[in-house]
Image (cartoon, rainbow, N blue to C red; front, top):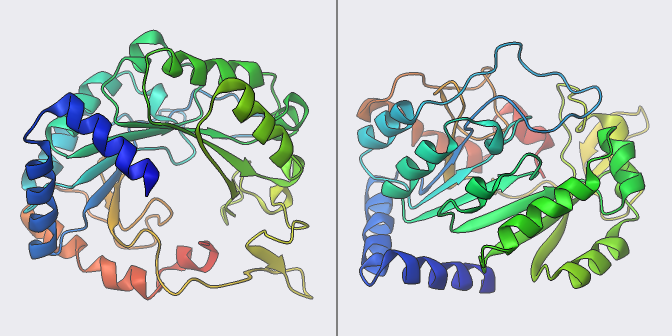
Amino acid sequence: MKRTLITAQNIWRRRGFSWPFSLLGSSVRCWNTKIPRGLVVEPSQSCTGTCAGCSRPADPAVLEPEQLDRWLTASPAKPVTIHFSGKHSDPLASPLLKDLTETAIQNSSMFSISTIGLGITPEHAKLPVDRWIFSLPAATDKSWRAIRGDGRFEEALRAIETVQKTGRRMIEVVLTLWKPSSDDREAFSRLAEERGWKYRKTVFGRFDPTGHHVGKLTNLALEDPDCPYRLDRNGKLYLKNIPRSCPLAGCLFLDAMGTLHPCPFTGNESPHLKEPSQDAWNTAKQWTEHKRNRSYPACEWCP
């Protein structure tokens, strides 16, 4: 709640006196039309990371600002929040990030970016982002190398510092615990104190059934008692506690090819829409109930 309030104060100061009324209007329109209030956007299929063993498309798609605008214009209700993130990718890899950011800000009340930080530039840091979220897979150089297979840990720390120097108040740093970094909690706390990371949290890595490098079974911190995953007697993975509802029920996902999905974890095996229109949005809002009931294949692994 405190993070949200601080973010709201920053946005109000930057966007002006009328911003709370715009926020309220957007929220009411989403509620009345039953359009999910959040949109997660993948700006590019490419990535700024160089993780060993990670496969990426030979010709990665890049979302065009015009395509994002077409989806937003077609919606009966503009999203309250737009969040740029990646699916085995990173927003900073998009050469069109500035234009995409402008489109997102013009069509939403709150805008945020999640990134691994690698490859950040001063121009990136100056973008009018309401909340920056930096994701670290480790809090020491040793565990970083064990997960990523490269020596770019210090570069990731400098990336956070680059945004800090702009004076942004809402910067959140998230440590994702994997098997090699499962003992990094104390190191993360020390880093946060030393570097002034006021807003931070620790989460567990999510299993990727496609066998993607970081999210594969052998990388999960299964020995940690707080890990949401367990293995049964036959070595099959399962969720220790199945959530009652979908934590992403209130959002949709637009990938770098301009295709709308129920969430970032469902793929083409689940319903998806390729052409923006009001009918497409009316179809997409029906996905919410399926997500609440956790009836998609990806829900089996979502903590």
